[in-house]
Figure (tube, rainbow, N blue to C red):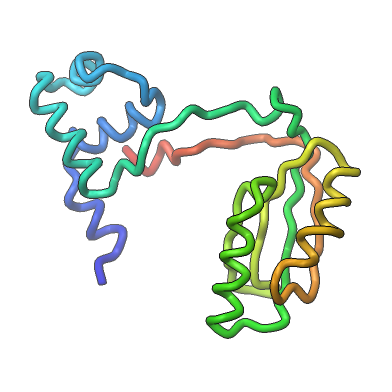
Length: 163
């Protein structure tokens, strides 16, 4: 099994510059990207295609501002399951993926099994989601909610990891 460091070691300085530039502006033209990283257009384009083929670039999408969409309420939810055998984990994972309000879901080690990031319009809509959806997910035994008062930092890419 290859580690992340092994996978990353296959990337050279130009690859890392491409990933960093595209993570900041995925709509950048190949010509602008080539100028930014200091390569000519053809090798730059070939590198982007290789990074896509090799799975370093997973895709391109528009990032929508959730606050402008009325999704101002963020809650982090600790979830403890009643059963942590593989089938139960799989059922929970599949169920979570069907709910758009669940922005992130992480299996964690510690005093609970999963940490969810939930976005809703307000506290009443979160309360309804908790009672009607989250608590009804397969094998949920207990939840604890932490409401975010302010997002201090949210980024899609760890800039320091691409230096």
